[in-house]
Image (cartoon, rainbow, N blue to C red; front, side, top):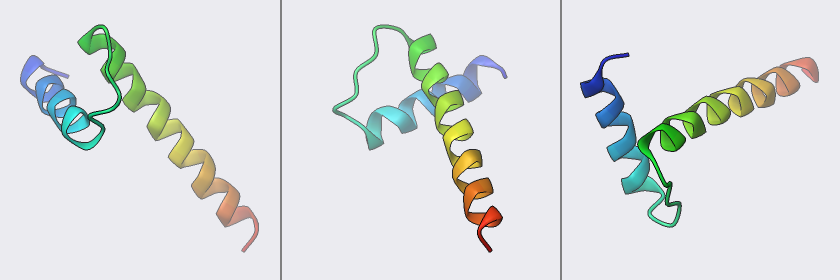
Length: 50
């Protein structure tokens, strides 16, 4: 991921969750990883019960 893509994600996160403040941009990007994993698990769980 290049720097401009990282900046887009960071800016989007800050606009959506102004409450969440991260010490570094890297922490912000790491949060995206956790969010994606959580969404995958939620989707898999829903699919398992269909």
